[in-house]
Length: 145
Ligand code: FE
Image (cartoon, rainbow, N blue to C red; front, side):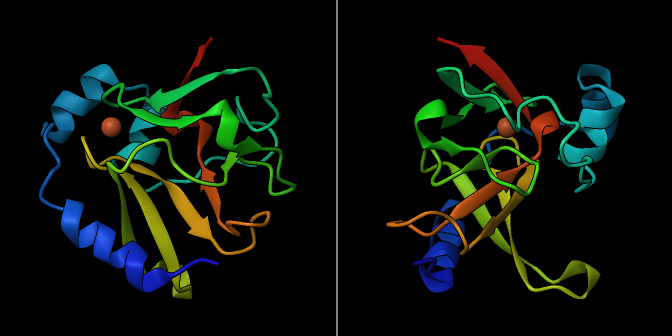
């Protein structure tokens, strides 16, 4: 079951660990416009038409901004939401933050290394963990095993 308190504790533990800092101009030089919009401006891509939502091959999902390992195919499941979904991250460097935007109470998922926006985590995932990390494909680079 999702425990927002422990998730927020993990955020506070990690919040000062972001080690890659770049200006928006520097990010624009290394990211595509779509990656920039999502990673640096908290954007969301369209469901069902993004690159990885249906991918089931074995491999690693690395941050499209800084190449840190974020998720692996072992935790991935096909979710009807139309975005890549994972039961848990592959690293403790993921950062969780309360997000009240758009009149919703959600928990935002960020890369702990470059502070890039990845997506949100929800409590309707498969048992036993019950968590669904709903992540934008554009925030990820899939590295096939
Ligand atoms: Fe990153």
